[in-house]
Image 1 (cartoon, rainbow, N blue to C red):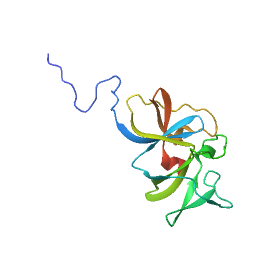
Image 2 (tube, rainbow, N blue to C red):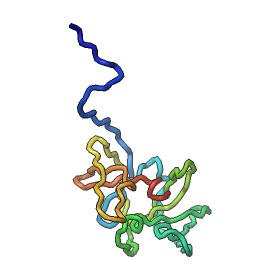
Image 3 (cartoon, rainbow, N blue to C red):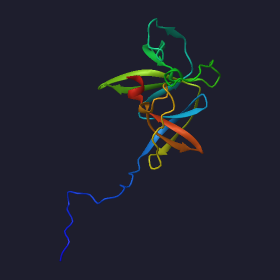
Image 4 (cartoon, rainbow, N blue to C red):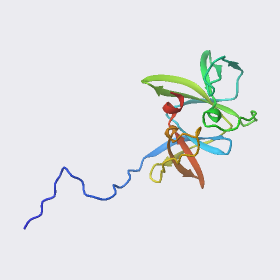
Length: 161
């Protein structure tokens, strides 16, 4: 008797994970390390004067002028429920372009420190556990490791949308 295996039905069992390597910029927010995909990064600048916006969303509290363009400044510390801190000599603004609802949006991300550009792998990526009301797992694509540290790869469109 000949066995016939259906082409339409995959074999039972776990599907091996497909590894993707992402080139990212490592940035620090407090004690956490975040990885921002380099295809979003337009430039990294020193802190500039800000204009506070009354009634703005708490994590988008101000506007900045970057080469004649007025863009919102996002404070991801607030979005993730982290404690605010004063700027230090290591503080930078990472200017990114993110697609939100099909439209490109340019904004600055306040970072406590910028580390380096490197690659991370999705091979050992893990889902984000639910840790509290502000720390929303849907804001995070995945968590991986870099230099023996956990690295958070955020979903920028969800965070900012």
